[in-house]
Length: 355
Picture 1: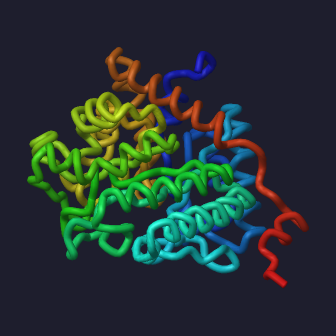
Picture 2: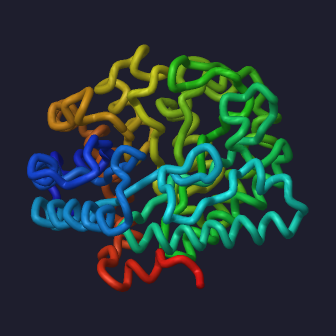
Picture 3: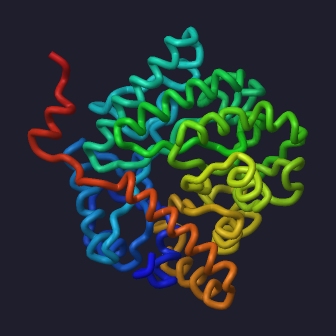
C-alpha cells in the first residue's frame, strides 16, 4: 500500500469486463497502463482450457509490468443456468437441484462439485468465483428463483457453506451473493430498481441467516445487491447504502473480507445514478471493488478512475475509504492470487476424460 499512488489505489477498486477471448495488444496495454484490481470473465471470454490459461497468464503479466501486482480473475460459475465455463470443464449441478437432495447428501454433493470445479478454475488462472448464491427463495416468482438452493434459510446456509468450503479448499476465493438477499422480489435488477418492504426482524431471521453462516465460515467475499430494503435504508439500494454495507455487513455481521458491488452498469443503478456517481457512492458505502462488466465497450475506465481520483484528492474521507478498500483488495490478492495457470501436459491431464 505504501508504494501505491492514490490513482493506483483507485484502480485497485475496479473490476472490469472486456470483450475478447484473447489478450490483444490493446487489452494488454490497457491492463498495464491502468492496472485495475480485477477482471471478470464471461462466456464471451471463455476459450478451451489451453487458450483460457494463455489469456489469464498474459493479463497477469501485463498487470505485473504495470504496477507489480497480480490480478484477481473472477467468473460466475454457479452451476445450472449460470455457468460460464462449459465442457470440458465439469458440469455443475444447479443450486436448486442440490437443494432438493436429502440433508447430508446435498452438502456432500455441493462440496465435491465446488472443489472439482475449483481445481479446474485454478488450473486456467481463475482465482475468484462469484458464487454461491445465498438468496433465500421466499417467493416462486423471484428473479433468481432457479439459482437459489432453497426456501429454507438453514438449508441455504448449510449448502452455501459446503460450496464455500469446496471452492476455498481448492484455492478459489468464494463470493456469497446477493447481499442482503434477492429472493423476495420478482423484479430483475438488470433492468429495474426493486424495493422490499420486509421488516428488519424478518430480514435478520430469513435473508441474513445464510450470510451469517458464510461469514463465520470465512467466505472470502460478499457481493451486494441493487435492491432497496426500506427497513434498512429507505432511499438507497444496498450497494450504495452505508447503513447496509458498513453498518449491517461489516459492523453487525462482523464480515472482514472483500465486499464487491454487483455490476454498476445494470439498469437498477445506471438509470438512476450514472456510473461515476454510483461508483463513488458504492465506495463510500463500504464496497471495496465495484464491478463494471461491459466497461471497455460502453464506458471509459480510465476516465472513471481519473474522476474518482480527482474527487478523492479533494476529499480526505473518500481518500481514506479508497485506501481501506485497496488494502482489502491487496489482502485478498495475497491469499488468492498466487501462482500461474497450468499449461501443456499438466493442464491437459486435468481435463482428460476419465478412463
